[in-house]
Length: 269
Length: 327
Image 1 (cartoon, each protein chain N blue to C red):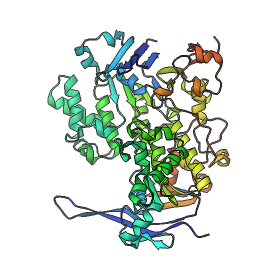
Image 2: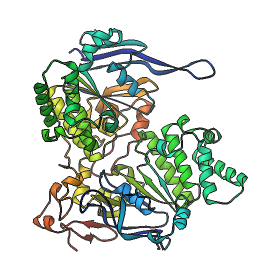
Image 3: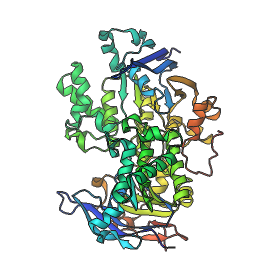
């Protein structure tokens, strides 16, 4: 089956200009290639600075890569005009790590969820409100709180709100960039359950970018390990965890803190 | 063995528009032995950060200590003068926060920031302070310590900034370091490095630590005892391995069960729904009387809605606050 997203040799170079001396190049992505099947979850894991967030931002068309291809629905997003990208962006939504700063806390919850619809301009006000309320319920928030300001929400509730907002445009792909990392453990479990349920019922594809290998192992069908701008290992989750072939993967596995559950034998490291 | 810190019946609330504001900490009691690592396990709203601030009387203006005492080296900190507190804060009891970029001054080199801590508490010659600063950095940055010393915070990685904060905290050889989610902003490999630093400091300096986190896995192999906070109350407290392997309080059990784990057996449960604790612990969803966890508890009894459970001793030093267990 055709993959829903195919990335080929993606390169992203930043020129760092300083006050003195020549500008220095920083290679954030050094030839990244992978494909993701529909209705599946690919976890992209790696240390800080490995290029994960740059990759997310290129695939979400927030930044243009220096070279390479991003194939989505027959279009190459890396070489598309802005007018084309504007049509594609709604289909690839990004959930950010920090729920506090990614939502305008002065706005009401309803305004935040309905904003993408308002910008798109296809639906009337009543229809937008109805859709927004149904999406709030869908993510486990009550439509009753729609009129309240977003400032009163907890971290977990904010991420649910961010997910509801992302769903308004019926995206095919959701990129979760460290979207659970700032949440408490028990809230992470609740949001993980929500994501699994949405994938099941809406047939979404997830790119789960994280340095939390435990949650990646739980949510993902495949894991790709990034190091210094490259994918150094990629395979089905069980294979990568059982037989890590690259040092970066082994280091990440060794660093995973685990509860001493005596009845569960640890993965061979 | 005399404790280095003895917290007794701490009650703290924040003044608000409500007529009777709910206490953020209620009846919290525990002690810390010299060189002991106490893991305080708590999620958002549990009162863990308020606990850290209360010990050093660093609450915001609307914070109110209702009752209780905090004995440090035999002295009640709640009766200490400002000058006595100033000599203790940063020198005898140090605090490390979660966000190193907020705690470090952005336009002062990190070496200078550590030297200033020394200068505030020790009247020594400038050359002696500089030498001591170099020593501390050499201890925490085995490679590159002189370059790091001269760097500004923005020139350092997240892990390096956290080490710089640790340098500030241990500069005056404190008896206790209170660390509030010190590794939350770090990736797992850096996290492990920071925990290793704490372990080695404990061995070399005999440091006692209160390590506050919401992630129980971090405390495995690190904490000596674990105190579990829920809605401002101690619900369980005991030897770390006991609490982690065989938690007794329904909240602790439910929390551990909701966490995914990497294991060969767990492969079958990949992409299955995790057994989460329903509801949340926001102040508006806490019951007005009875056990705070009761609305979310799978083992609730009628008794739990009427009365608050007291701490029951389960043998040794393991205590739990739940009607399921009788004295």
